Image (cartoon, rainbow, N blue to C red; front, side, top):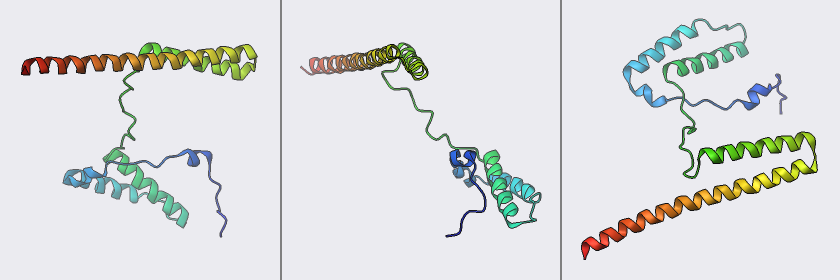
Length: 152
């Protein structure tokens, strides 16, 4: 096996591959724009070494795709869980603060406080989930009850 000639930086290790909206290339105007921008970028590539040529090609393609096509969302625009509300958010933030305090002090009282807060947060989430599902069940029962009475 040939050892790598360059060290991998921390930024490259943490870098996740970008995904682009490739389906937009079906549109002729977007394809034309992509080709035009890419040809402009390719004329400015440093080709003194093969490594610089490769890096220049990769950067040109990525930058052109980002400008012309745009990136996919990675699914991070999902809705919040059905049980999420502001009080739970505040409780979780308080739990995180307690945990960070315990990490910095290593005090047994801070650990007990963090443990107590964690239990309260879990109970609050369970209570909120149960409230939601009780309301949902009542809604279904009400709907089924009303439809049964109409059929009779």
